[in-house]
Amino acid sequence: MMPRTAILTQLAARTSEQDLAFSPNIHVALKIRTALADPECHVEEAAHLVQAEPLLAARMVAMANSLAYNRSGREIADVRTAVSRLGYQVIRNLAMALVVRQMAQAPTQGPVRDQAARLWEYTLHMTALARLVAREVTGQDPEIAAFAALMHDLGGFFLLSRAQELPGLLDGALNAEELAVEIDLTRRLLSVMQVPASVITGIEDYWAGQLGTQPASLGDTLLLAAHLAPVRPPLHEPAGSGSGLLAAIDGAMSDDTRQSLVEEADEAVGRLRDMVADAEEELSSLLTVMQY
Image (cartoon, rainbow, N blue to C red; front, side):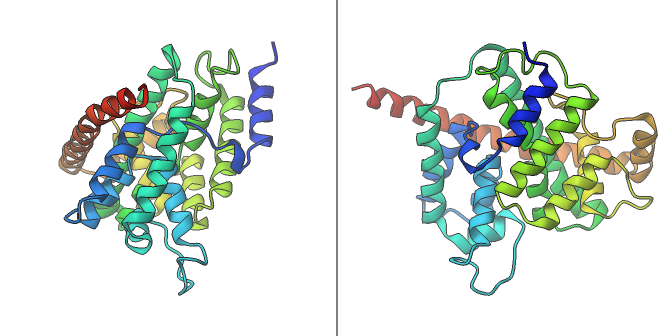
């Protein structure tokens, strides 16, 4: 069997727009479609729904920065502004395109499904926490911080999408060499998906794992959010998990601030879980109709 490092290296080298077929969360995509059909849906609600699906969020921001939608030439790097710039109908169409692609794919089974669910849960917590850390600690734009959190582990979603066709790919946690290749893969994905350079730089700072003396950067924001997240990513530990960094992170926030952020993030993630659960019934009905 080919060594896992070699498999990962080949996947990174072949990364292209055509390879971006890793599965979105179909329930979230359906909820987005339904919510945006309601004329009373507020832009804040729409943005929070979209942020639950990293692939959709990335493509929305890239589209909002394209010539067709960015006549002013002002680049954006957050989902809320992308929602306002694109309009609900465009977003509904993107969401449904993802639903169709998901239905055309074979369902993920066994451990891979569990890992995908865990990565999604971790990403939800990272997104909620990054927004709050930006608001309360680092002074970064909360929506840009949330988008960066959504994007920071795209390589993990991509590897999970390839696990069934490449046996042994995800047997055990990634070692240091394999993790370096996954980071390269994520960097390529971010570039292919036209994620703004400022966000990629922030994610790269996060990978470096160096927290500023007075946390203020986008990378600092992601490091703090990862430290606070109650769910661990399935393929590797968050960046910079050494004792020295953890001590620095603990010194960056008071216990009261930490507790307050975690509680508020838990509430935000809980609301999103409820939204997804509501969509499951709609999905079941849709699939039943398609069988006839």
